[in-house]
Length: 189
Image 1 (cartoon, rainbow, N blue to C red):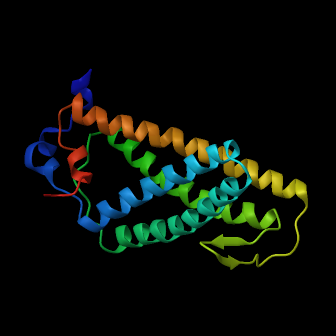
Image 2: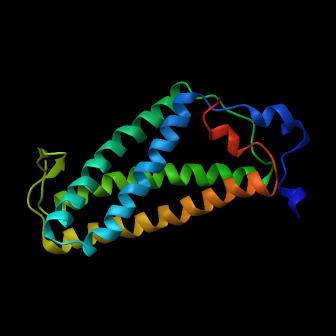
């Protein structure tokens, strides 16, 4: 069964050891860190008293705005300067991997936009490390705010599930298939 998951013969050896460029690697890990940090803040702030709770929300918003810049830079970099590396697998496995990456991009962009919408439909300004960014829209009903907030929450959980699958696949490549796919996203020495 593992043979079906292994790269095609022309994709083995030196080809899979090719690294992504350092900018792509840095943007990947910055995205991962910000996604995990934002999720952790959102899932734990209710356990803290008012001053810390409020600071965690401001941190979540601020790191979300940073994620906006990182994901925009990542998309632009990949589009303009990224180079295609050999596929990690072949056939259906490669299609699934590409689909997962594209779905994650779409969901993270949607999550960022939903984050802005959540704050603004709650009739609150964004707070970027103390810099207040008011809503460009008018007043929203509480029902609208709750709906957008729920979509934001559900989308976050979907992202985390897919991130988990992505991480398990990378670890599986490293330990089960013993190929060099995981090393392509690690900084080169």
